[in-house]
Image 1: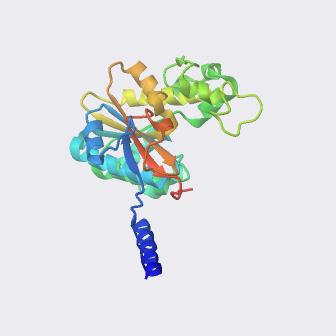
Image 2 (image 1 turned 180 degrees about the horizontal axis):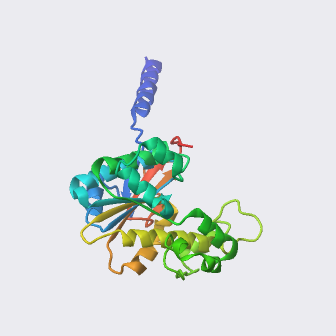
Image 3 (image 1 turned 90 degrees about the horizontal axis):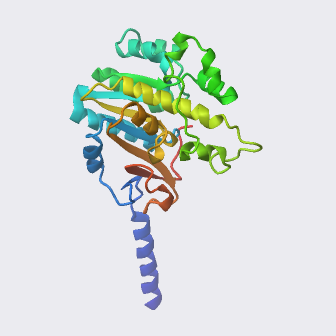
Length: 291
Protein backbone atom coordinates (compact mmCIF):
# COMPACT_ATOMS: atom_id res chain seq x y z
CA UNK A 1 0.00 0.00 0.00
CA UNK A 2 2.86 2.34 0.94
CA UNK A 3 4.73 1.52 -2.30
CA UNK A 4 1.57 2.19 -4.29
CA UNK A 5 1.13 5.60 -2.66
CA UNK A 6 4.73 6.57 -3.39
CA UNK A 7 4.37 5.40 -6.98
CA UNK A 8 1.17 7.39 -7.44
CA UNK A 9 2.86 10.48 -6.01
CA UNK A 10 5.77 10.15 -8.44
CA UNK A 11 3.38 9.72 -11.36
CA UNK A 12 1.48 12.84 -10.28
CA UNK A 13 4.66 14.89 -10.03
CA UNK A 14 5.88 13.71 -13.44
CA UNK A 15 2.48 14.40 -15.00
CA UNK A 16 2.45 17.94 -13.63
CA UNK A 17 5.99 18.56 -14.88
CA UNK A 18 5.07 17.50 -18.41
CA UNK A 19 1.96 19.66 -18.31
CA UNK A 20 3.99 22.77 -17.48
CA UNK A 21 3.71 25.54 -20.07
CA UNK A 22 6.45 25.79 -22.69
CA UNK A 23 6.14 29.39 -23.87
CA UNK A 24 7.99 30.36 -27.02
CA UNK A 25 8.93 33.67 -25.42
CA UNK A 26 8.43 35.83 -22.36
CA UNK A 27 8.24 39.60 -22.40
CA UNK A 28 9.95 41.82 -19.85
CA UNK A 29 10.36 45.54 -19.31
CA UNK A 30 13.77 47.17 -19.00
CA UNK A 31 13.96 46.41 -15.28
CA UNK A 32 13.22 42.72 -15.72
CA UNK A 33 9.58 42.80 -14.68
CA UNK A 34 6.99 40.74 -16.53
CA UNK A 35 5.31 42.82 -19.23
CA UNK A 36 2.10 42.34 -21.14
CA UNK A 37 2.13 42.39 -24.93
CA UNK A 38 -0.84 44.78 -25.02
CA UNK A 39 0.98 47.18 -22.70
CA UNK A 40 4.05 47.07 -24.92
CA UNK A 41 1.98 47.95 -28.00
CA UNK A 42 0.28 50.77 -26.12
CA UNK A 43 3.65 52.14 -25.02
CA UNK A 44 5.58 51.91 -28.29
CA UNK A 45 2.66 53.32 -30.29
CA UNK A 46 3.30 56.71 -28.71
CA UNK A 47 6.88 56.86 -30.02
CA UNK A 48 8.09 58.48 -33.23
CA UNK A 49 10.40 55.55 -33.99
CA UNK A 50 10.14 51.96 -32.77
CA UNK A 51 13.28 49.84 -33.06
CA UNK A 52 12.91 46.08 -33.09
CA UNK A 53 16.31 44.57 -32.39
CA UNK A 54 16.16 41.04 -33.75
CA UNK A 55 18.27 37.93 -33.73
CA UNK A 56 18.56 37.45 -37.48
CA UNK A 57 17.98 33.69 -37.48
CA UNK A 58 15.24 33.52 -34.85
CA UNK A 59 11.70 32.65 -36.00
CA UNK A 60 10.03 34.03 -32.88
CA UNK A 61 11.64 37.42 -33.44
CA UNK A 62 10.48 37.48 -37.05
CA UNK A 63 6.95 36.44 -36.11
CA UNK A 64 6.77 39.19 -33.49
CA UNK A 65 8.03 41.75 -36.00
CA UNK A 66 5.03 40.96 -38.17
CA UNK A 67 2.56 40.90 -35.28
CA UNK A 68 3.79 44.18 -33.83
CA UNK A 69 3.66 45.82 -37.28
CA UNK A 70 0.09 44.60 -37.76
CA UNK A 71 -0.98 45.87 -34.35
CA UNK A 72 0.69 49.23 -34.85
CA UNK A 73 -1.12 49.48 -38.18
CA UNK A 74 -4.43 48.99 -36.37
CA UNK A 75 -3.57 52.03 -34.27
CA UNK A 76 -1.71 54.24 -36.74
CA UNK A 77 -3.16 53.22 -40.11
CA UNK A 78 -1.44 55.03 -42.96
CA UNK A 79 0.70 56.96 -40.46
CA UNK A 80 2.88 53.86 -40.18
CA UNK A 81 6.21 53.70 -42.01
CA UNK A 82 8.31 50.53 -42.15
CA UNK A 83 12.03 50.17 -42.75
CA UNK A 84 14.89 47.75 -42.25
CA UNK A 85 18.61 47.18 -42.06
CA UNK A 86 18.15 44.27 -44.46
CA UNK A 87 17.66 46.59 -47.44
CA UNK A 88 20.42 48.85 -48.74
CA UNK A 89 19.76 52.44 -49.70
CA UNK A 90 20.65 51.98 -53.37
CA UNK A 91 17.78 49.49 -53.67
CA UNK A 92 15.14 52.05 -52.65
CA UNK A 93 13.89 52.69 -56.19
CA UNK A 94 13.52 48.98 -56.84
CA UNK A 95 11.68 48.53 -53.55
CA UNK A 96 9.40 51.51 -54.24
CA UNK A 97 8.50 50.18 -57.67
CA UNK A 98 7.64 46.79 -56.22
CA UNK A 99 5.50 48.33 -53.48
CA UNK A 100 3.60 50.21 -56.20
CA UNK A 101 2.98 46.87 -57.97
CA UNK A 102 5.00 47.84 -61.03
CA UNK A 103 6.04 44.19 -61.41
CA UNK A 104 5.72 40.81 -59.75
CA UNK A 105 7.71 39.38 -56.85
CA UNK A 106 9.94 37.19 -58.99
CA UNK A 107 11.31 40.24 -60.83
CA UNK A 108 11.92 42.15 -57.59
CA UNK A 109 13.56 39.21 -55.86
CA UNK A 110 15.84 38.54 -58.81
CA UNK A 111 17.21 42.08 -58.91
CA UNK A 112 17.25 43.22 -55.27
CA UNK A 113 20.11 42.45 -52.90
CA UNK A 114 18.20 40.23 -50.50
CA UNK A 115 19.36 38.34 -47.45
CA UNK A 116 19.31 34.56 -47.73
CA UNK A 117 16.40 34.32 -45.28
CA UNK A 118 14.34 36.95 -47.09
CA UNK A 119 11.50 34.67 -48.18
CA UNK A 120 10.85 33.24 -44.73
CA UNK A 121 11.68 36.22 -42.53
CA UNK A 122 11.43 39.58 -44.33
CA UNK A 123 9.13 38.99 -47.27
CA UNK A 124 6.07 38.87 -44.98
CA UNK A 125 6.92 42.40 -43.78
CA UNK A 126 7.41 43.74 -47.31
CA UNK A 127 4.18 42.10 -48.44
CA UNK A 128 2.35 43.63 -45.47
CA UNK A 129 3.57 47.07 -46.53
CA UNK A 130 2.61 46.40 -50.14
CA UNK A 131 -0.86 45.15 -49.25
CA UNK A 132 -1.59 48.16 -47.05
CA UNK A 133 0.06 50.84 -49.19
CA UNK A 134 2.73 51.65 -46.62
CA UNK A 135 6.23 53.01 -47.34
CA UNK A 136 9.12 50.62 -46.70
CA UNK A 137 12.48 52.35 -46.40
CA UNK A 138 15.77 50.73 -47.35
CA UNK A 139 17.94 52.28 -44.64
CA UNK A 140 21.29 50.49 -44.68
CA UNK A 141 24.50 51.65 -46.31
CA UNK A 142 25.47 49.66 -49.42
CA UNK A 143 27.72 46.93 -48.11
CA UNK A 144 30.53 47.84 -50.52
CA UNK A 145 30.92 51.20 -48.78
CA UNK A 146 30.96 49.65 -45.32
CA UNK A 147 33.65 47.29 -46.60
CA UNK A 148 35.70 50.27 -47.76
CA UNK A 149 35.61 51.73 -44.26
CA UNK A 150 36.46 48.37 -42.72
CA UNK A 151 39.58 48.21 -44.91
CA UNK A 152 40.81 51.78 -44.76
CA UNK A 153 38.76 53.92 -42.40
CA UNK A 154 36.37 56.81 -43.02
CA UNK A 155 38.84 58.49 -45.39
CA UNK A 156 38.07 55.86 -48.01
CA UNK A 157 34.63 57.42 -48.49
CA UNK A 158 36.05 60.78 -49.59
CA UNK A 159 36.77 59.39 -53.06
CA UNK A 160 33.13 58.49 -53.73
CA UNK A 161 31.09 60.42 -56.27
CA UNK A 162 28.30 62.75 -55.24
CA UNK A 163 25.79 60.16 -56.43
CA UNK A 164 27.35 57.45 -54.30
CA UNK A 165 27.35 59.71 -51.24
CA UNK A 166 23.57 60.02 -51.55
CA UNK A 167 23.41 56.45 -50.23
CA UNK A 168 25.28 57.42 -47.06
CA UNK A 169 24.79 59.57 -44.02
CA UNK A 170 26.29 63.04 -44.53
CA UNK A 171 30.08 63.01 -44.38
CA UNK A 172 32.11 63.25 -42.30
CA UNK A 173 30.35 60.81 -39.99
CA UNK A 174 30.61 61.74 -36.32
CA UNK A 175 32.34 58.92 -34.45
CA UNK A 176 32.86 58.32 -30.74
CA UNK A 177 35.14 55.30 -30.20
CA UNK A 178 34.30 55.34 -26.49
CA UNK A 179 30.66 54.37 -27.04
CA UNK A 180 30.15 50.92 -25.57
CA UNK A 181 28.79 49.42 -28.81
CA UNK A 182 31.99 50.34 -30.68
CA UNK A 183 34.45 49.87 -27.85
CA UNK A 184 33.19 46.32 -27.28
CA UNK A 185 33.87 45.43 -30.91
CA UNK A 186 37.59 45.88 -30.31
CA UNK A 187 37.64 43.45 -27.40
CA UNK A 188 37.71 39.68 -27.55
CA UNK A 189 34.48 39.76 -25.61
CA UNK A 190 32.84 42.00 -28.18
CA UNK A 191 34.03 39.92 -31.13
CA UNK A 192 33.96 36.24 -30.10
CA UNK A 193 36.48 34.06 -31.91
CA UNK A 194 38.48 36.99 -33.27
CA UNK A 195 42.19 36.20 -33.18
CA UNK A 196 45.23 38.42 -33.57
CA UNK A 197 45.11 42.20 -33.49
CA UNK A 198 41.59 43.67 -33.67
CA UNK A 199 40.74 45.63 -36.80
CA UNK A 200 40.38 49.20 -35.52
CA UNK A 201 38.32 50.10 -38.57
CA UNK A 202 35.65 47.47 -37.86
CA UNK A 203 33.68 49.61 -35.39
CA UNK A 204 33.98 52.52 -37.84
CA UNK A 205 32.26 50.39 -40.47
CA UNK A 206 29.56 49.62 -37.90
CA UNK A 207 29.23 53.35 -37.20
CA UNK A 208 28.74 54.09 -40.91
CA UNK A 209 25.91 51.56 -40.96
CA UNK A 210 24.34 53.00 -37.81
CA UNK A 211 24.65 56.59 -39.00
CA UNK A 212 23.23 55.78 -42.43
CA UNK A 213 20.27 53.89 -41.02
CA UNK A 214 19.57 56.76 -38.63
CA UNK A 215 19.87 59.28 -41.46
CA UNK A 216 17.35 57.55 -43.71
CA UNK A 217 14.95 57.05 -40.83
CA UNK A 218 15.19 60.76 -40.06
CA UNK A 219 14.82 61.77 -43.71
CA UNK A 220 11.71 59.62 -44.16
CA UNK A 221 9.84 60.51 -40.99
CA UNK A 222 7.36 63.35 -41.48
CA UNK A 223 5.73 64.85 -38.42
CA UNK A 224 2.89 62.75 -37.02
CA UNK A 225 4.11 59.45 -38.46
CA UNK A 226 5.36 56.32 -36.69
CA UNK A 227 8.40 54.52 -38.08
CA UNK A 228 9.04 50.89 -37.14
CA UNK A 229 12.56 49.77 -37.95
CA UNK A 230 13.92 46.22 -38.01
CA UNK A 231 17.60 45.67 -37.31
CA UNK A 232 20.00 43.37 -35.57
CA UNK A 233 19.76 43.89 -31.83
CA UNK A 234 23.36 45.12 -31.59
CA UNK A 235 22.40 48.17 -33.66
CA UNK A 236 19.95 49.48 -31.05
CA UNK A 237 20.73 47.76 -27.72
CA UNK A 238 21.55 50.05 -24.80
CA UNK A 239 19.96 52.89 -26.81
CA UNK A 240 23.18 53.20 -28.80
CA UNK A 241 24.11 52.52 -32.43
CA UNK A 242 21.30 53.79 -34.65
CA UNK A 243 19.53 55.39 -31.68
CA UNK A 244 22.64 57.43 -30.85
CA UNK A 245 22.87 58.84 -34.38
CA UNK A 246 19.13 59.39 -34.74
CA UNK A 247 19.16 61.62 -31.69
CA UNK A 248 22.03 63.60 -33.22
CA UNK A 249 20.05 64.11 -36.44
CA UNK A 250 16.68 64.67 -34.74
CA UNK A 251 17.13 66.04 -31.21
CA UNK A 252 14.05 65.49 -29.08
CA UNK A 253 12.76 62.55 -31.11
CA UNK A 254 10.83 59.98 -29.07
CA UNK A 255 12.21 56.47 -29.41
CA UNK A 256 11.00 53.09 -28.15
CA UNK A 257 13.16 49.99 -28.31
CA UNK A 258 12.52 46.25 -28.26
CA UNK A 259 15.27 43.65 -28.22
CA UNK A 260 15.50 39.86 -28.27
CA UNK A 261 17.74 37.64 -26.16
CA UNK A 262 18.28 33.90 -25.82
CA UNK A 263 18.19 32.21 -22.42
CA UNK A 264 18.30 28.59 -21.27
CA UNK A 265 15.53 29.43 -18.81
CA UNK A 266 13.20 32.28 -19.66
CA UNK A 267 11.38 32.20 -16.33
CA UNK A 268 13.36 35.25 -15.21
CA UNK A 269 15.25 37.84 -17.23
CA UNK A 270 19.01 37.56 -16.83
CA UNK A 271 20.79 40.45 -15.17
CA UNK A 272 22.97 40.99 -18.24
CA UNK A 273 19.86 41.65 -20.35
CA UNK A 274 18.24 44.21 -18.09
CA UNK A 275 18.39 47.74 -19.40
CA UNK A 276 19.13 46.70 -22.97
CA UNK A 277 15.84 48.11 -24.25
CA UNK A 278 12.40 49.30 -23.17
CA UNK A 279 11.10 45.78 -23.74
CA UNK A 280 13.08 42.55 -23.86
CA UNK A 281 11.82 39.40 -25.56
CA UNK A 282 13.42 36.38 -23.89
CA UNK A 283 13.41 33.30 -26.12
CA UNK A 284 14.47 29.75 -25.17
CA UNK A 285 17.96 28.97 -26.45
CA UNK A 286 16.60 25.68 -27.79
CA UNK A 287 14.36 27.50 -30.26
CA UNK A 288 14.92 26.40 -33.84
CA UNK A 289 16.73 28.77 -36.22
CA UNK A 290 15.76 29.85 -39.72
CA UNK A 291 19.26 29.23 -41.11
